[in-house]
Amino acid sequence: MSNATRSNATLTNANPNRNPNAAINLADHALVLVIVCLIALISNWTGTGTGPITALPGMLIIYGMVFAGLVLAKLMPFYLPSVAWISLISVGMTMPAFPASEWLLGYLKEISFLSLVSPVLAYAGLAISKLEIETFKRSGVKILLIALLVFTGTFVGSAFIADLML
Amino acid sequence: MNSLSGQLTNWRLHLLVVLISVLAELIGIIKIPLGIGSIVLLPLFYAFIMGLLVNPNIIKKAKALISNEKAAMATPVILISVLPFIAKFGTLIGPAFEKILAVGPAMILQELGNLGTLLIAMPVAILLLRMGRESIGACFSIAREPNIALISDRYGLKNPEGIGVMGVYVMGTMFGTLFFALLASFLATTGLFDIRALAMACGVGSGSMTAACSGALASSVPAMKDEILALAGASNLLTNATGLYLGLFVALPLAEKLYVLLSKETTTAALQQRSSGNV
Image 1: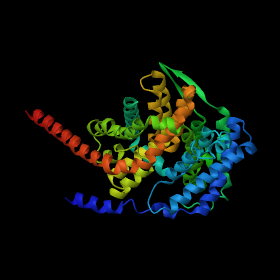
Image 2: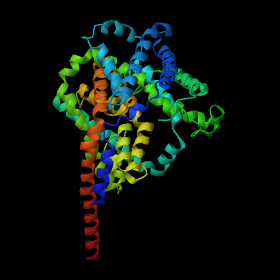
Image 3: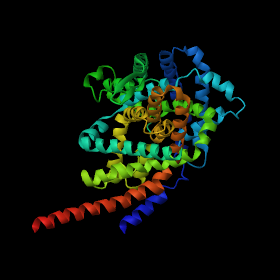
Image 4: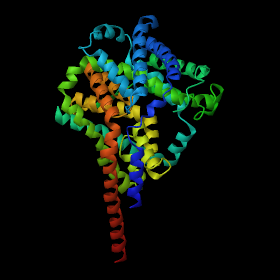
């Protein structure tokens, strides 16, 4: 009984109309994005051999798409994760029906998507905190086993349904 | 989210990331044959491992390279550094939009596959490992940021449900990308599933998990590279848009029901065992 009232009270708090993205600081994001894109250009250079000057227009397009997505995420009256906004923009602008899609894709092909992820994972490795190591040590093998089952269950569940439907 | 101010002066962190990325890209993609399949190692794994090796929280000697405080400033940067990649991913989806529409029903319904974790992980957590309410947080979803927000809102992160979701989140951060990539490239070579189905399944996790998974899949089946990346990206986009709501309205209520059902079973089983022992 008390459980039910508790979850009811918190459910109203979880109202999706409250947009947590309204707190995004666009200036800070714009600045850090510059650093991140510069690093991505270097990573792309070593990964694909495409020089930073050749890849620059593509990277500028990506920068513009990300920033536009952040602006939408901040200003819209309802909540969608900023990654969803950014995807909607980048998908929309490269669909064949979009007038400039061919022109955009000509520049975007100079950027390898895998090279964009290497810096992300480097940051992720550096960001692992004492707290996370503690969590790992405390719950250790048990939670690792559960996590691997969670990943496998989700992946195989999804692949299974997709396979049936194709 | 932590503050982003002061990132410009933290040049040591960014320089380390540059060096790591360059080294990782120079090593390149490595394929390892394994039994009936083969697994694919990507530069992003090496980047993660090198990141761990210069993390002062893990390797004490790394303090000479970067202080704990400066390394901790990497946390808010991860969320931003993943955005250009999300945009690039979108630009792979756009041109393939018609192909994605053609597999539309599969694409939408495979989102329900996220519930597969309840079927596989939850019974093991409760019946085998005898976990308590942690199992609800740990098993109801793949534990990415929206799911943590949901659990935090509903139960609080200090409660068992919160500890469960954080545990899986940490494991996902550490091993998720690697595990998904290995799983996908391995399953691809076994021929059990349609490659397009595996590509869609690659989208169930975070952006970097999707990248690793579809990157490895594309290296295993190079002929289908564009289609694989587009389907995985579209699936991840759909997960981002619907994940919170699937969790809130379907997965979490189901996890609660399943918990009551399974934990009752364990108590009656325990009772039976006890009573039969008495006899």
